[in-house]
Image (cartoon, rainbow, N blue to C red; front, side, top):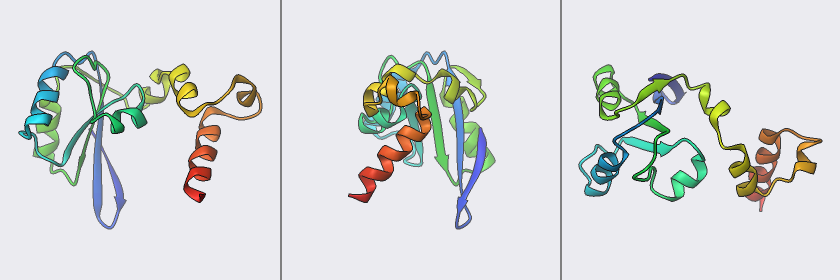
Length: 131
């Protein structure tokens, strides 16, 4: 897991996993309330949608794990929960489902001819927040 400073002395630890085989068990633990509330698992295919749908599904194989203010032991505990291969966080941008992201944010190919995908998403989020 990689640890980021997020302000006020708080930290956010993130790890990206592929080939996860125990998503159903993780989801069962989440819904049963047996996981610590500081731990979050998100489907890394489309992060915004995974937040709306309570993280992961039973068939998620590509998972982003997150934990705020974790000690080294807590970080190890999160990593041990996932049966999968930890991969570099840089893969998140490479493996993202570009077509699904374009569909979700309603970004046309014509728009991508004059702007990057991240710029188009940023402008939509900024416009929505300005309303």
